[in-house]
View (cartoon, rainbow, N blue to C red):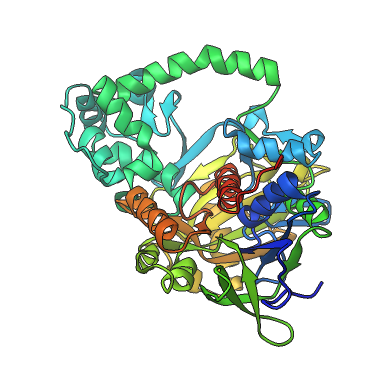
Length: 494
């Protein structure tokens, strides 16, 4: 399909350009398609621009030798319904797979050995002192310090603050560094002291405000959730985390099937500039196979990382330049596949997390064949290790062979796995994980408002703004698509 330039737009056609062909961009296109796909007057022409050769962004599944390996995110959080809603709308509900209920335990590396995460924690915050008292992860002094949370007065800070500073004040350094920070780093690949409380875990601020204690509030949350989650699990038959049998890339493949005859999906194409045009819309300059082109757009959805959006949009609104304050961490995933009978270790959990104090190259590990048994058949063992996070980027400077050797050496020390893997696959993700800074929510709101006033019809969406999980991105994409429909004075019925 050839691109439409400014000369080809007609009064009977409205043009939307979506910059970025990851899950956010494709979901936005899908929402527009479902709303207006059969419309004939005015017709909506949608173009999705993706710089890479493959659509999907961070969703990438390798299917090889009977293994199913997620190089990026590996699951959907069921309670965030946008992900499951999209799965259903694409006819993939029958392919949903639950995580293994016998492998939901998580270990934490402590002094070179694995210790179980204490039972009854709320995102790492101890809810039951009895289970915390038994753990070896926290010293007696650290446990006593955590108990002060029951008596420490509220901070009194109304605005945003550092997640780490907030938690350290209430629970002390040990609980934060050994329990909470490894969990948060597993999601954001960030230093917990650099993250925004309001943008990452606002529930903690709510617990302090309403209960005066994170431990007391977490216990009430878990007590209230237990019967509800049990009833919900029985009703839905589903676990908290779900994936697709052939991998999450099936989402991207099905989106392509739905969209490729309706929308123009252009890969290996880079957007170099977005400016106002003489038609009252926007001129989107692109470079790709063939000659450079300029596309007319009546509306634009920008789903690329925040630092790229900052460059593209700063000419339309000076405020957009502030998006560069959202830093991104680089990471890598390392898959190791082992033949049956070569790993003589009971991999009875979803994996392990690594506190920074352990000074390891591995930051976390998922025991994939335990967590998702369908991913490796016939007794094969599949392990995924993560390398790199903010403040720990040194390992990413190594060549692939050196990273593999480092990961194998650390698995030998922690898990006593001495066997050689028959399969190794490394995927590098440069500047891939957005770290929401203090003031993030206000920053994003200010940019969105500035675009609304100074560049109406231009919208930002994606992992850099309102949550970085797949369901968050889909929900953000749906919201951006709805704003496009409102801006163009369109709806499914008009």
